Image 1 (tube, one colour):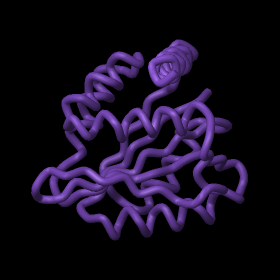
Image 2 (spheres, one colour):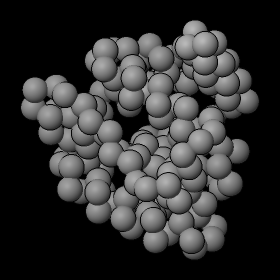
Image 3 (cartoon, helix red, strand yellow):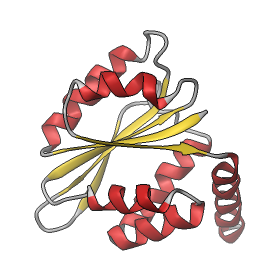
Length: 157
């Protein structure tokens, strides 16, 4: 089953170090990380996305589309991200906790895991501390992301 895992850290550098470690773990079975990004929120409330080069981040496909939609929704603030994830079908408790983790001067890693359970990745992530959340990504969520992507593409053309 696919999972979305989010981990919040009290500064940007911490998340960056974890991303670097995750890159090394990606090549080691059973961990199979397809995508990982992190967000930071500065003291004025501005949110920035940090992504790795293609090869670590899959630059096409459903997960990249979800990241793109998340970034676009964050332009409207954390409440807009909350609405987006709720409409996609993510668990309400997970959405509430995730958006609460986007604290000023903190960073939050978002990892999309496809070929292993989050339980296999959580011990590795726990080594780095932080606040850890995970939720399964059900088929209906994927369908909702595909539909939203298709609707956005239709509006452009």
